[in-house]
Amino acid sequence: MDPNKTKSASEGIAPMGITALNETVLSNQPESRYECPVCLNWLRDPVITTCGHKFCKSCITSWLRFACALSNMEKIFSHVSSLMAVVQSRRPMLADASDVEVTTDEDTGNSGHCPIDNINLSMKVDIFPDNYTKREIQEQRMSCPFAAKGCNVKVTPLDLDAHIAACEHNQPDTSAAQTRLPCAFHAVGCKDTFESQEDMNNHLQNDVQKHMSFLMNAYSEIKINNDISNASIDTKEQEAMNLWEAPDKEGAQASAAPLTNTSTLIRALYERVVVLEQRNREQDIVLANLTKQLSALAVAKMKQNSDMLLRYCAGNYIWRVDNFQQRLDAMLKDNYKMLYSPGFYTSPNGYRFCVRLNISPQNPLFFALHVHLMKTENDDCLEWPFNGRISFAMINQLDAERTQRDTMMSNSTLVAFRKPTAEICLRGFGYTEYALVSDVVRNGFVKNDVLVIKVNIKCV
Image 1 (cartoon, rainbow, N blue to C red):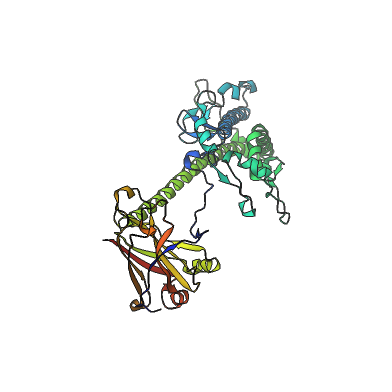
Image 2: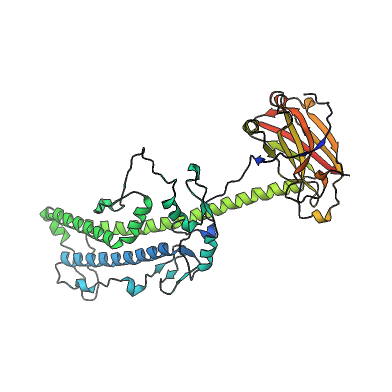
């Protein structure tokens, strides 16, 4: 490549059917305002609480039902502990099973606390349908998970499950072994298995009472085993345990109860584990939301910085084409594919240009290099057609003296310099045969798979 060789600039037009190599992909992840804090998925049948938080109706109902069931379990365990203390003290029974008040859903209206801020909630008076959010979600569109298999359908998040069930591309992989998931309460007696995690989650939500029975049965077995082991205790040790005295009539405790009651210890540990798991789940939800917010802020900050550099570069822009070999291979395979730089400004409120690099449609051995005018919010305040000087410099990163520099003046008679009627003017201005592809690849213009092109545009 001769760095001093002059070339004639001309107006060019992008070939029909061009496709940019940096196309964006639509994300199927819900925004934070459409995300349920419990299941971390799209809000389904959304409701809003009096404390201002949004949930899926099924999620908050299950959460409150679990809180009610946990409260009942604590009352039952407390009563059982009292009965055991009475038996050990050899006193008459002071309580009856009928003394235990088990709270039902009808008593409390599925009452509990908010998973976010721990505010007391009642399903009857504190939960309301959020139809506005439901309409907004229904306006969203998501790609089918089987798009890679050829499904091009886009549906609302609320209709995605129904579409997946009926999608013709949803074919099971018969080569993979089918494994079923056991219930999380398998260790205490539940023998149900499931094909997917979603089926197991539905089972856990719908069979709370069944799992409570399994837990109570397991607790009873532990109690019986403990009594059997206590029966084999040495006589002297048994006498020492019976030295504990019952409280007197004034309620004063004569001596502390022995600490060898295994069932009481297990019950206390179980209650503590339940509380810690609940707190851990709430903290995981808060941490996940904060992580998403920080990621969104980081992306927004990077975009803001990039936009500031493009607007205040004064028409002096350095375009670094990374992953150059991969992009070149794509252009050589399909000559209609092109690379476009971001849009940069000649001044903060001035003209906006971008640079196009592609394989020359007239000679596939050459690169074509053009500039295109782009729309701005200030086009009505600018003078048209554009009149100025445009300079290109393809930087040789191994030998600066071999850098190729070219300068051209605008032509007011060409469509390429008139006021844009589209986001990017279809007609560009530049060189149809700017540089040999082989020279660019081999002679030091590409370093670390990056090609650098410097553009300077000045109004005159």
